[in-house]
Length: 145
Image 1 (cartoon, rainbow, N blue to C red):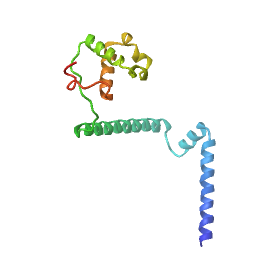
Image 2 (cartoon, rainbow, N blue to C red):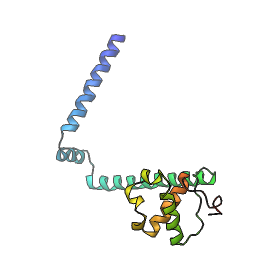
Image 3 (cartoon, rainbow, N blue to C red):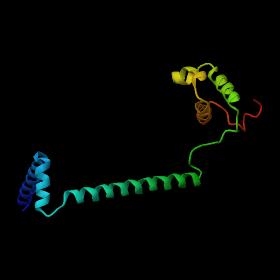
Image 4 (tube, rainbow, N blue to C red):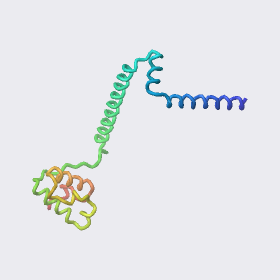
């Protein structure tokens, strides 16, 4: 009984392998012709598959957004503190001060080291990133600067 079952499984495995190989070797034209023979409309099927794909991507994005919102609501959305408003001159001074600390500039990218070539938005973004990394203290901790 066990021998018979094993032989049957082996035969099915060989059949499945042959069908897969046949499909892989078939040209696009052959696959489309066979699909049409079975009553399918490739153009209609392609449109419906694209629509299904777009709906699934939209659904997945909404799920990720819902999960992110839930994390933020639960207080686990990461430590994202807002910087107190700074004028850009003060922001550039603070960035220069941080870059002047021994060892800090060496671990930053070359672009980050050239503060004078950064846009205002880049300077503010870098200060926020440095705050999140713990290199720069929070404004609440830095009242006496």
